[in-house]
Length: 458
Image (cartoon, rainbow, N blue to C red):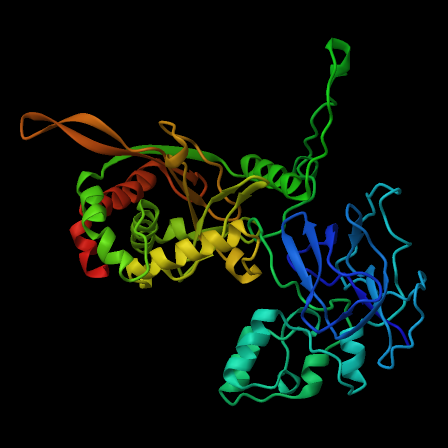
């Protein structure tokens, strides 16, 4: 019988996606994990791989359509290639529990009515003990191959029966596993997306102002004063707008300004550029900013936390995962480098360059784009004398950096030129007071002004 593939559960509370590009045509014979479609969600640009090998019998979507999780994207012929080609009424999968949302799509852009009756392909195959693919991301599949682990023998703990990296590692370490564990209860989450570019991981309300009882008044008719052009916001830009509104509305922001004398640091970078390049690394100021921030966070735990207001608790994180803002034409993306406090500087610089490149190409994995505890945004390359960034909710602080400039400074009674770097620390006033912010910023400045302490990191 025909095998339908539905828009999988993309995680992070996402319920719909816009089709950016269809990479296959009806009649194509493709292999499992080959690129199938490119979609953009309200938080990610995603390349979805094929969940199976076979011939494409019917493509149900086209570029520009917005579809919900669980909607049929492509129907494959059955194993014998005798599927009902062109059957537009192919059965679909039910949305995963808790993923349904009110349908706000333009009727002209939506697909057939929301499917709701067929068990999701991946789990149905597993439940029947057949050879259907195990729900897992390509990176998890790669890890399984590297560790010699059979995904069908791994007990899944992820949403909808998805096998995670931790599941694979547990199986490689001799943890108990069973093929049935990966089947799970049938939720409509097919193959996880291969690539994604996301904003912050926590999901916030779709309309943050309305959620707290605030609603902006309708705008006037601008056409009365002259011609206008209306451009629809992309999913990513809508999410940036919503999340920034959420952050600015629910978090009492306070900003502390400081400057760091990075004359010696700039000289250190210049002296070690060739040495670092010989190791395949380009030293940048941002890598030093990340390391300095990580060391300061370790000494000031409240800034490496999140506030659980409902529980009345401050969640102190015992890990330091730093987000670094990457500017792209379609919006600002914040990939995350993990355990920055425990990594040498050269490794941070190497990871930063590779991660920023993958992010700009839309190839960063979801794991690389979530879990941050603190964000650094460096606009120095673009100019400016300073900025007040908005906190990346649910973090409690963000460091803004502007362009360093030569300025006259009095040292030992003499006026000398020094390279000064403007810094702005914006933090949640519910979590810390002004004095706390000043001390934390001073810790960052102290590391930047004494780069000799980082020499061993090179």
